[in-house]
Length: 145
Length: 145
Length: 145
Image 1 (cartoon, rainbow over the protein chains, first blue to last red):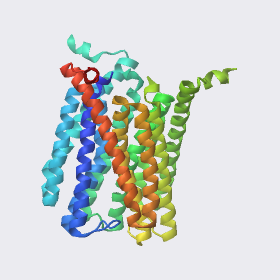
Image 2: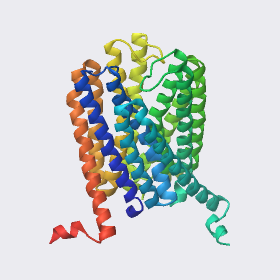
Image 3: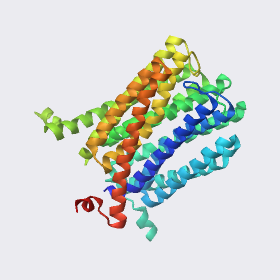
């Protein structure tokens, strides 16, 4: 059974490592700009790094919550590839936002697109499972006709 | 096996869609009130929408973390119904908070109540599983006597 | 199958209860210092409690995202023990941060250490599963030689 989720688990743990990296960047930025906790306001350079990390943290559970259904109900390998691209796009988002507020925009659209793809894959897979179980309708066989 | 989690997965993905809707509302509010990232402070109208979204994001993983154990260890259908009510209460919370700070209160209690119900269902189901496995005690059979 | 995850589910639900406790502390602090939502700025005493709760919320999904792979791919009991220690360290972090900003430091390192252990357990377990499935390599048997 574990081989049905090991790629999803691998991408999830890589995502945790990425979040750890982002958190360390905030700690370094706090030292560089002398912003001690619990303070979160400071020069724009600091606030961009801080907000980038907050935004990535906020989306992490949303990402995991669509990655797993997409992998379980649609296709593990495809979901894992989308997941890796999402983590790469998050890295570009973080480094782009660090440089300028507008630098976050392109990777943000890339991120959002990948979340929508994972929502689509999850939705299609779950709908198939629900239709098959409650209506007895096998969409895949239907398309074979 | 997937039919034992498809309702939970469906509610989770609906929850992600709701979070996407809340995020879009913040983007629109940023445009309306001219608050560019990384800024998060502004007029109370903006701050209420921003805080509503932050609060919903903060509780999303907590919601998922009790929805799934409640569904797996107690009853999937019941957990899914509580989950749908929770997502509806979150919508009322967001729209209520958008209008006024006090408008968030009633749906907030509704939300909290649903989280407590899911905690109760999870707790009962997990306790049953632990007792059965480690003590050999079948609570359900005990109640049959 | 549920007995392979019941300890993980128990620790997760305990984590939700801890988050509920932290949230209540923020509500009490808001009353004590007269900081009404959507405001989040105030005296350092309030801001420390507020930031402690935000930090714990931010790390909750990250914690869950390494607890479960560590339990599924390595050892459920060991992951659950690390999980309980993590929740205890989070409690020390919250109460330490409440007293002073430096009071959060020791439990913060303790927390981080436990997350790294869970990352290590997850990583080892997942790698073993991937190698076994794609390369046919059984690391455990290899070490037996």
